[in-house]
Length: 268
Image (spheres, one colour):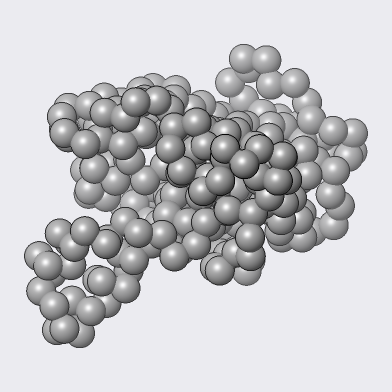
């Protein structure tokens, strides 16, 4: 049985002018009494560990504002909601989107801002998530890396065209539209939402990653090899190693990168 979660996060600006990503962890009291202060303890043992990450868009000021608003309102709304995990996650997402709408109403200078969002609730039963956009939720298990949530960019559609022979794989991978979003939190209606249909049971040795899409300068195979080589490392060491691998790529237009890592702790 899962008895707790180790967790950590790190971020880098990359080649951008500023940081437009935001992320938060919160430990939600099982008694519904609100959040338990995280302080700097490495293991969450009381209630649900909530993780949320948003990747802003709309320029540095607007993007940073949108991602900050989304994460803070998501955590608060999840804390205040009741019912099953799916219900609470859906309510938190809706609140985050409405909070962005309210901010746009109050400040016209923020017009055009928005963000992606991926939120995950880790309980002793397993993992639930909700996401909009292209920020991946990844599971490393048995030496392999899996993306759990849907990608709401044009990348999957281009890859499907390539698989059907309507364009080459090289054309799909280099298409300038590849990272265009089909859905995001902008304060308006949300076109696409991925809300997990059932809990994902966790296993010993699992590593869960929430990330902004800047991490995808690393291929899944590269990330899997890194995580396999560091199987015994704590989440803090894993996120540092992943960002170091991104930096080593020296990508000219490297986007902001934020990585959150969670490892379940089991009874011995």
